[in-house]
Length: 229
Image: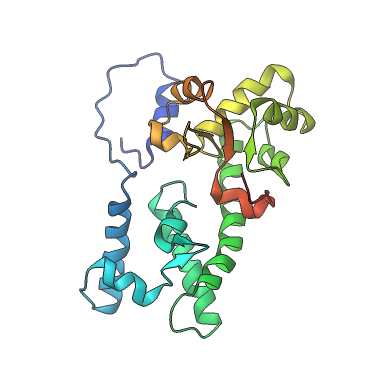
């Protein structure tokens, strides 16, 4: 049996009483250079240009978005899945083509982010509904939310969305597991479940010593979150 996504595999494995008998080869999608190679090969295949990624990327995209290196800006707004990155890039190219630009400009990326963020919000909502159909549309409880939240803030929003108190811990952990929520480390850096191999317990243990929780950048535009931490 082949599982494309490690998070789905871990979730299903947690439901089986027959643990420890599986043999798995894990393909990690956490290395920025791996994603650069995916994009580089597609550019090379489409254009015939064989220059290194570092030369091809600035020829096709503005180098920075709001002061951040543009490839990192785009990748950081994905859940570290190749299809998410490719979807965002296709939307960027589509906006640039429609505007008759000969390369993807910073404002094209920002415009593409609006559509991409809406798509991501809807897609993860569907995934959450498949896993826990009793909690439909829970992500929309965070419309207008600050980016940075305490656990009490999160529980308050879940309560306002009609999530019973007995279910809030389960929903909260699902939001962490899916990567909708992450933690802030002691240096103020955002960290999400893929960086912990989807180990929610470890995240919670570390979060108890840290500053709080954050909404993933992929969803902030669609939810209208405050843009400052």
